[in-house]
Length: 469
Image (cartoon, rainbow, N blue to C red; front, side, top):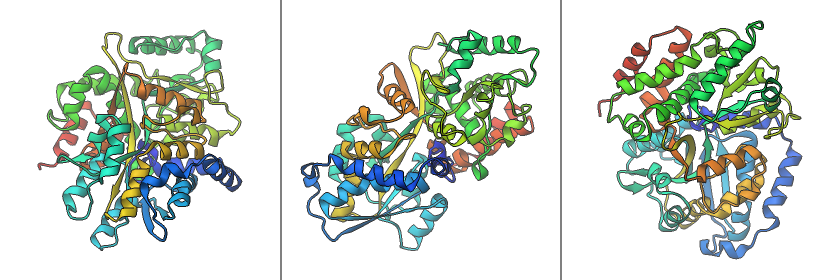
């Protein structure tokens, strides 16, 4: 999804379900306005305006920004713009909206498009370019050069449509995580699994060890997310597809070079079902399998704290939800809660890594607009954003000073993103056409859980929804 999410990262869901709006709301619950002013001071503390001379004198100009990022996360965004404004003289006017994905096309059609928009789904970006070919402006030279210098080729590809770069990377997230309690594992004598087979064996061991306690299960899960309900289940399938079929087949699936109901997808969904539809494995502290469909994803991991669940698969941005539950919870390897990499099968050549992010697109080529887009693709912005954000934000920019990341899980996420042992792939549903990625894929996976709809019927229905052109 998106992450503007609170949702995902599918940091772009309809409310950015992926995370955007939701995550922002979650973050809003854990900080005060006093924190904001402190963060602003930190952002400006070590600014050298010589680093901003490349943008020129922009005194008296204004750049409008529209995004799904709201509340505290929006405040942190605006703080990260302060050095650009101070050093160039430009003014950045930011507007966040939970209705971003619905309203952006409306604004474009009415001739009132913003100068800059943050698009959380590459599939949505492609739709915008196809539907409004004269509205979006290709990325300027300076921003394009920053992308080439500070991002991998794959991140450039995510923002490219028909050979033209339209979107520069902004934030990122890692989804291939399993949250757990280090103390619960230690007390039970469990070790973090290093392979998929180890993880299933651990799940079976937990079932055996808790036979006298029917409320405690190996796993807890929830896919509720308002209009975006279902996206956490799509993340499960995407992560498992990467592990069972491999990155190359995953790419073919996402681009529809193979049908959505290909046998390899059926195998992956069946594998997901061995966890999510296994009454012995789920849904610790929450109910039976069907409770997954009605449990809000924001609360789905909480049974771990009550020692009713041992594992919860969710993205890096989920860390903010622990702070919402209890600000005193320590998210660290030796803390109250931590996360391990969702392991690959023991015979996998590389470790697949699922993630997401947002992209900056422009609707005007004025010098100040091009300069601001270039700034957002620079290490200076990534470092300013890291300074302003205590937790829940990372970047794939290789110029990011990782020592500025204040959260251990953010630090771990960047380590995985930059480790050549891991092979990164973008969230599949975010790459698919909107009718599928933010439509039938979500709803059918919900029915798969809520109504026990068969694997075959679910995949056939999603395949039938794929647009013909």
